[in-house]
Every structure is written in structure tokens, then in C-alpha cells.
Length: 261
View 1 (cartoon, rainbow, N blue to C red):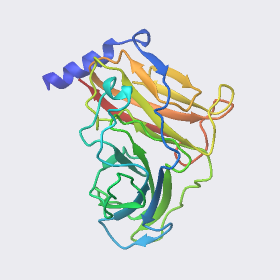
View 2 (cartoon, rainbow, N blue to C red):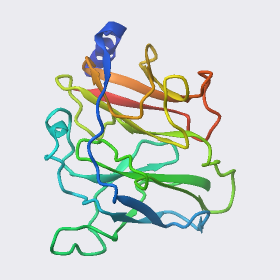
View 3 (tube, rainbow, N blue to C red):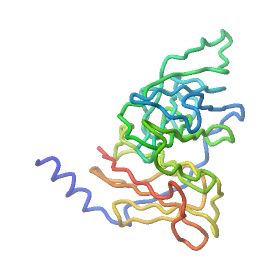
């Protein structure tokens, strides 16, 4: 109880002035990277849990580190190396770094490589949305044209209304408790936007931290958060339209609680 109380006390001490949110350039990526969800099929009805997923990843090696990029020395890393981040509904992502079903060719190219994994939670009856994208060992998502895959499926029966995935929506990526977040390094803020472009006078993302720190993000790039103190924090992202109203879409408001050590 004492340590938890200290986390709450430490969180309450920081002010808006302590935090700085700085856009940074995207890590370079090849335009050949592609992610495809093979199983389940769109609108498939799966009889029961567990739910297995099979995906094909082209041009991106899972498990290798991203140490060739300077960013690997600047922010927190995962010991899993490069992974696929999988988001079910609007829950925090889980990383996938499973052995490939297809062997790698000797020259080190990675094409048509398939992976199979189990969703690590029991899904309720009805409709669910599956999203996935590749990420560097420091959590940054790839943002190429074919690097994001999304689909809906059902568990137990065809019940509930499937979201309209043609509307603008937001996918939260980082920061997350999958990373060892520390107060002595900047914290990566990263997300994915679909079916819209971010601009100064158009769609934007509103960042809130613990309900009192707000920034408008007009660029779809990674950001560094400087000055986040030790403790427990809630990070919230909202996709806003041109009138600064919350977008009426399937996933326009998402938040996650993180711990900085």
C-alpha cells in the first residue's frame, strides 16, 4: 500500500510545464513491407475460444533488433526485438514474435513469411475487431501503405454490429507497459490513423495525460514525451475532426495506464 500511495503522490506533483511533447521523424522503412491477416477470414464465425490467428508478413524480420537506427539508443527497448503488435477491439496491444511457419531463405530476405498465434485472452460472444502492424524493437510502428491490417470476426454467433472501418479511426500503440519506461529517457508516443490525414486545420489527435495535460498533434509522426515523472499515468488519445469534435467512428477515443520507473 505504501508504494502504491507513493506512485499516486508522485503523479499528482507534476504540472503542465514539466512535460514537453516533441515530434520526431519516422524511422526509415522499406516500401515492400506488407502485413496480411490470413485467419480468421473477414466476418467468419468462430465457434469458441481460443481464437487462433495466422498472418503473413512480407519484408520484415521478427525477432531481430533495430540497433542500426539511432532511436534504439534514445528510448526504451523490448527484449523481443521487432514484433507484430496485435490489437483486439480497443484493448492494449500484445506483441507477437512466434517462430515462422515458413523458413527464411539463406540470403536473409523475408518474403511470404507466415506466423500463427493464439489470442491470449478469452473473447466474449459476438463481434470483434482485429488490427495488427509491425513495430521496431523500440515500439515505433511502421506506417507504410500496406503495413496495417484490420478485419472483423465473430465468436460464438453472428451478434452485434460490426464497426464501419471505412470511417476515420485511431489505433493506439505507445507508450505501453510492454516497454520498460523510465524517467531518465524520453517516452515514445506512437499511434496509427486510418482513413484520414492529420493537418493543422483538419483532423488532429488530442493528447491528454492524467486528464490535465493537453496537446494537439497535427502530424502523423512519432513523438517524444519529455519530463514524465516516475509513477502511474493515464495517456489518452482522441481523434478530432475539423471542428475539434470527437470523430463519430469505431475507434476515436482510447486510453492506457502506464507506469514510469
